[in-house]
Each structure stands twice: as C-alpha cells, then as structure tokens.
Amino acid sequence: MNRMRNWLSVRWTAIVTLGHFVHLLANWPTIWIHRHNLRKAMPALNFRNGLILNHGEYDDPLLLLDEVFVKRLYDLKTNAPQDGIMVDVGANIGSVTEFFALESTTLRIHAYEPNPAAFEMLRRNIKDNHLEQRVIALPEAVGRESGDLSLWVDVNTTLSTAYMQSSPDEGGRRITVPMVGLDEVWRRLDEAPIWLLKIDTEGAEGDILEGAAQTTLGAVQNAIIDAVSHLGIRHIDMPASPQRVWQAMQSASASTAAGLNESGDA
Image (cartoon, rainbow, N blue to C red; front, side, top):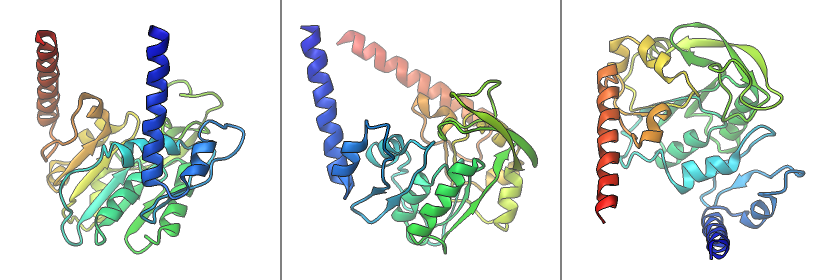
C-alpha cells in the first residue's frame, strides 16, 4: 500500500510540475525533456509572457522558476508606485529582478550580485529582456560595511556564500569580491525612498541590517528578507530594527504553534 501511495505521489507531483511548465513556458517541451538530463546543458527558459531567463553551469533555473514564478514567494500583493525604486541584494541571475520589472514597467532596480558567474547571467538577462534603461547591475556584495569579502564560487550560485568555513558544494573555491554597506547603496540612490529592499545573501542578512544606519532603514518602505522566509515571514514593517525582526519571528512561531494545535484537535 505504501509503495502504491509513493508511486501515486510521484506521478501526481510530475503532473502538477508539467502543468506549471505548460502554463508558464513557451519552450516547455524542451525544458521538460532536459530537466533530469545532467549531460546536456538546459536551454534558456522562454516564458509565454516574453521573459527570458538565461542561466549557466552553476545555476539552478528550475528552483528559481518554482520559487519566483510558480509559488510567487516574492509577490507583495501590492503595486509599486510610479518610478519606484527597488534594491535587489543577492540578485543571482536576475529572476526576482525580472519578476518585479514585469509587474511594474516604471520600477527602477539596482541589482547587486558578487558571484562573477551569476553576475554574467544577470547582465545577459537584463540585456535580453531589454531592461537596460531600468535595471543597473553592480558586481558587488552588500554587507555590514564597505571592504572586501571572501566568497565561495564554482558552486551552485544559489549556495554561494562567505559564511561557511568549507565549501557549500564540491569543487568550490574562494575569491575576493568588493563589498559595500547598505548606507552606500542608499547614497547611490541619492537617498531616495526605497519601495522594496529584497535581501537573499546566504547568511549576510543580519550583517547588512545591523550595519545600516537608522536613516537608511527608515527609507525602506517594504522588505523581503530571505533569512527569515523559512518561518513564513514575507514582510517586516520598516525600519527593520532588531526588535521588529524579533517580533515578526515571535508572531510566526505563535502562528505555527496554533496551526499545529488545530491539526491535533481535528
């Protein structure tokens, strides 16, 4: 019986995944064939809405497809203001940047990505999606302060980090990349309001927030911080002080506990 359930679960998951591919991708037959073929490079994802997501050897395009476009984990359910500003810290190859650029045709985005391989794909995606006038790509890390950062590369770019002593994947090596603080990021925007700050930096999230001045954090109207997303937190009121982050974590824990109690009572 368990074998039958597992078989049905696997088949159902495949059917659901195929449905998402068909719905979102114009070249879904090719991507479907390539999804488990590790010997051949998977082509770019060509979306039915016109977006193109190029990717390289160390990228994980299907993970990004699932998180950004299928599950829509970054969807704020609110519209960006006219000529609003977004800062994408840890932009990777640009999937989240593309998502928000499609949602708002006037949104201006500064995308920071220190991994050279991911940055090259980020620039290519900006060019191929004709976003050069609205998206500025910067090959820098964002951290507590300006300086240098020792970053693991030649690994899956979604795992690239400076916050592990050993490589997060086989074959990794360290390189030194330039780093700026969030205060410098805001200064480059002429200290204009930031409609959305998205941070996904594989461990640097706390340093970034703690190193920023309260005036900088006060300029942020919305934030998506991946370090607490696993708790179900998708939004933190600004400014993102340690107290507000802690309150959001406590609320998420309480909600989880309440859900477990309800399940137990059912």
